[in-house]
Structure formats: C-alpha cells, structure tokens
Amino acid sequence: MDARDVLSEAASRPATEAKALVDALPTGALNAHAGGHTNSIAWLLWHAGRQMDVQLAQLNGEPHVWHSQGFDARFNLGELGDTVGYGHTAEQARAVVVEDAALLVEYLNATAAALSEYIAGLSEADLDEVIDTSWTPHVTRGVRLVSMIDDAAQHVGQAAYATGILASAAGSGEEA
Image (cartoon, rainbow, N blue to C red; front, side, top):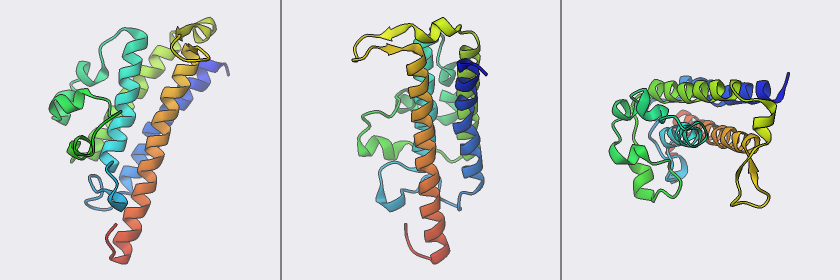
C-alpha cells in the first residue's frame, strides 16, 4: 500500500463514521447543542464536509462539490452555507440548522469521493510538492491532505461525543 492508498482510505473514514453516528442519534439531537455548546452535531458534520470541499477546490481548481452537486440548494443555508465555519460567531454557528441527517452524510460521502478521486490522480512526487509557503515549515500537498482528513475526523469525533452526551441525557430524562 502506498501513501496515496493510505490517504484515500483515511479520507473515507469520516463519512463512514458520520453514517454510524446519525443512525444512533436520539430524536431531536441533530440540531441540539450538547452542554450548551455553540456547535450542534449538524454544524460539526456540515463543517467536516465544507472544510474538505473548500480546501480540495483550492488544490484541484475544480468547483466546490457544494455547488457542482447542488448541495447549496439542498441545504438551503443561503450565504452562510458558502462559508466553511472557521471564525463563525455563535449566532452564525447556531444558524446552521439541518433537518436531514442523511443529507449531511451524503455531502460528506460526496466530498470524500471527490478527495479520493483527486488523490488517485496524484503521483508520489506530487505529495512532496510545497503548496503553501506561509507556514514554517512550508506545507506540502501531502501534509495539506492529512490536515484536511484530520480536521474532518476530529469534527466527526466531536459529533459522536455530543451524540453520546445527548443520548445519555435523553435516557436519564435530564437536559443536555
């Protein structure tokens, strides 16, 4: 297995885990704010897909999956949907409301598929190419890909944790 195979496999994991967690969501939990936190499970899953999508478009020069596959219209988040979530105010984060958990998983799957397709077209040498000199050390394409996948995995993990909190609270009759 070469590095591209590893990256492609890793890119698929956040969407797979998101599917498992939405299947376990308690009723009403998707847009709930566990512990009063600003980011709902919907926001966390939406952001996991958006950040991969936006960064991939920067790498491959292609339109965002968000637009090219009609997710912008299907999510109906207006201009807020065109953002990534970095730097959202509490009000903006709370405005990301999604009623269809399957749509979130579909978007994550679509971004993961586009990312895997991009990775498959790279050579080993492409992974070593410096693509961002604004950081020290400079960022290679391979490092950027790892960062994108890691960010998605962390946010899906946070959504899974929030799901557990909400499920526990629902089972005990307490408010999360």
